[in-house]
Image 1 (tube, one colour):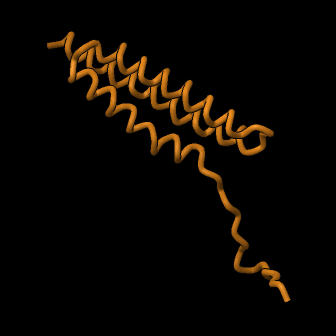
Image 2 (cartoon, rainbow, N blue to C red; image 1 turned 90 degrees about the vertical axis):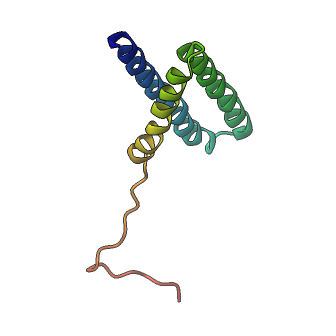
Image 3 (cartoon, one colour; image 1 turned 30 degrees about the horizontal axis):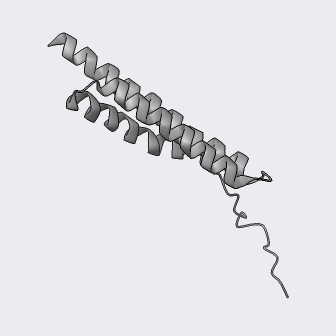
Length: 104
């Protein structure tokens, strides 16, 4: 029982790591790709690399066990809102005391 718990816990951590690689890599790619002269190459190359790494990770972590695969997927999906929250762009809105200029 203890061994299975440790195995599932390591699958969860593996899912977290795969999520960080995938979603963090996506964030990094968008930041680099939009200012690149060849954005299609950045986005396509990143998609292939991130997907390949994550699929290989799921294959390695799952090792034929649906429980490990499911827990790994759960960890992967949990990372998405965390990475989204950590990488959000803060938009400055004018304070109520500042006058907003309008086009005339």
